[in-house]
Length: 77
Image (cartoon, rainbow, N blue to C red; front, side, top):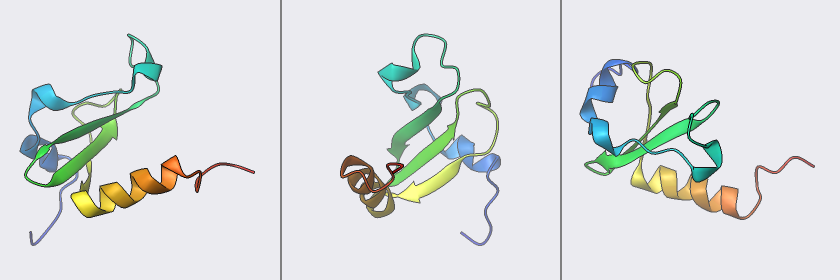
């Protein structure tokens, strides 16, 4: 990939594969959506801006983030 357009990259992810956590509730308010469906890439976007920018991580990066979150690395003291 020569350049990265955070808005256009959303087209690379299946539109029916965006998920929010159950904690977000039925309205999907102030949440993020994750999409695990694109060739070893993970997309992350604001649930209120479905046509907006998408952050993209590879599987290794996403795995490292999830592992760190699970062990409390991002907890506020």
